[in-house]
Image (cartoon, rainbow, N blue to C red):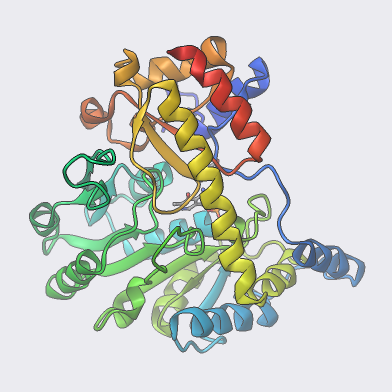
Length: 396
Ligand code: PMP
Ligand code: GLN
């Protein structure tokens, strides 16, 4: 976390957004939408401010939001939650992750994640004194139409034997992220069931980061908490940022059995205590929007994915279509770029576009396998994606 001179190294997102600002390049690095979310949600925040919802909310979150989170889990997943004891509002999914891992991981405890992984995981596990074990996601390139296997099992997947080998009695937490950042993978039910089986066998907790739960392009999201035997050992994390295009509001939450919520709250109360009073009822409004809002948002994003993916392929990158989320991973090797980090530093000059090297999501010892891969965000307006595609075409 510290640079060689003792200064704090900025996250890859801060570094790449600064590069975009400095060069005027199109920022497809940090994942945030460039359009506002639903008008009702924005208006609800304005109204809450006007109504004086501007002081500390209750520690576990405002009842209106906790009830909306419980109602959302019931409506979409059939999960019944007691809003008073099984729901906790946090300062984004980031604080939910930090408070949860700090609550349950002691020095030397192992935390298993897939790799690549969202960069905050490694930092928080290290702060908690934990040992980070990873299970690689293996990439099979999308076969072209007519090639053997077309339309089948392309994408990023874990090997079940490698997953089995990583989970042991030293494992305190299996930290799942599906839909997954940065790959856009959605874990299949067999993998989720294996995670539950392993957690049960080794008495580990499951912490599941589902911030992209509604940004899925195809089969609906399956929360791991809905699998048999999972609920009592699972802490589910989500956030309003992605679903409602309000990443700057930092309203997230955990849902879990009451004793686990109590343990996380014990940590959370001394991290931020509370956050985002007027945004809490606004996110509650969002969670109550009709089904069509959620399905339309995913369809809109899928069209953006297709647009950027086509642009990247025309430019000469190799990729497979992500099944969810904000990002597509593109392999620059076919263009003759072996080092994605170097390419990302040069890309504003070469093409006026910013991306993020996938090595930022990988342990320093294992960068080789991911060296030529770049993550691009497609949660941007069509004209921005078209312009980025046209610029990237200059690379070939
Ligand atoms: N987890 C994942 C997988 C993410 O991609 C992000 C943000 N992009 C977060 C957590 C953080 O969410 P929040 O902004 O709500 O803290
Ligand atoms: N989660 C977003 C991403 O992956 C941004 C997170 C951040 O800026 N820390 O790009």
